[in-house]
Image (cartoon, rainbow, N blue to C red):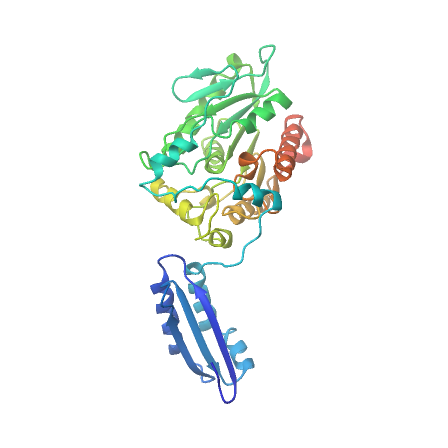
Length: 387
């Protein structure tokens, strides 16, 4: 754009897939905002991509243009646009992870039509260790050697967006803790969406936790040292189960470990939008499909009060959808006077330590997580402290 005098401004914005019409409608309303210093305002849609929009403005001066964005109407416009726009800048992956990710086979987008096929890749085989199955839901893996007596217990909840995976998914993570700390590992199969919706998955997991607590003595478990842990969707379910245990006066949970947790169905954070429309282990679109399949909108992030929770460990990558909701959840625990330790691993993609356990960043994350659990189980007051 050119003007004989004054200031010209041009911007190109990219709407989230399918939201181009909403962005154009909002921008076309902008000239109705009274501002005498704006002399032209043109909105053009790309001929090749309906979600790419070009905005050209002419102002009497650059100062007038900048001043406009301090007004209430302009701030309201920006606030309305923000959830609809794709974020084009995002944290880069750790160099080693970037190389490893490039070598992964391409997977189709997660949709209703692809779910059954993707599920075949998400299910994992049982470990090469003795396993005791309790019905169709729980499996117990005991430390090698002498029978467990008054041992700590890790109750493991698997990931998979609550639409895929099984009790053995990511099982190597809690088995590392077993080898290091002598914990009994109990892993749970919960019913998956979309076949089962509502709070089914959370209730299944809470029921398994209750069974463990009721049978702690015969299982050789210390009922005061039961840890609830999970990754991704399992991390979100672990948070939900811990809240349920608090609100239902039991069972007692000594701590929770939330690994890249799926906590918030609203799916509208900056980190969620940073990983929309781009190749990623878990995208904003996959997240939206998973929450739609579940139809469970009482996500842990909506809990009104996070007081009274056990000691909590949270971690995630800086380059993943769940980064911001994880940070927010930790901050809310601190605000409520609770004990939380948060680690955001720079350059980490979603599930990096499960996908590539030998990568340097994954080794560091696993070691740090295990160190925290060791301190918790030893009775370290700094870990357990809360207001």
